[in-house]
Image 1 (tube, rainbow, N blue to C red):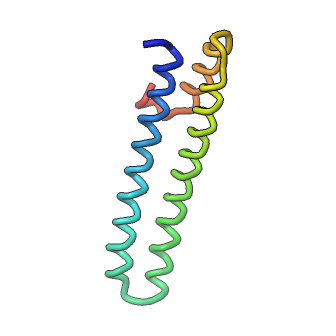
Image 2: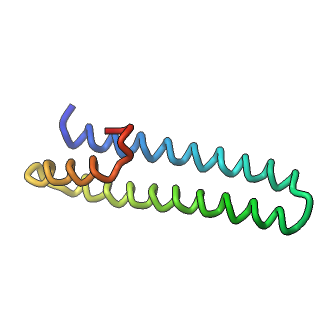
Amino acid sequence: MSLKDSLQRKLETQTEHWSKQIDSLRADAETKMAKAKDDQAEAEVQKEFSEKIQSLEDQIETARTKLNELRDSGEDQLADLKKRIDDWLPSNTN
């Protein structure tokens, strides 16, 4: 597998992981909102989960940008791109 393919797979795998986390957070939020005693409690749950979901969505968008950059890159740019991707990704995916 080429370096380019390896980096692409790494980004795609991480993006899928974040998407699953978003799905899980949305399910948890729905459960907690259903159990909320009042509007204030519901709003707090909504705020808590919205921030987490937005953060993950931002990460996914950044990964997509990096994927596009990777697809458009030449072999001479891969070493620098690999370093930037590895520095950006969570340490458990490197």
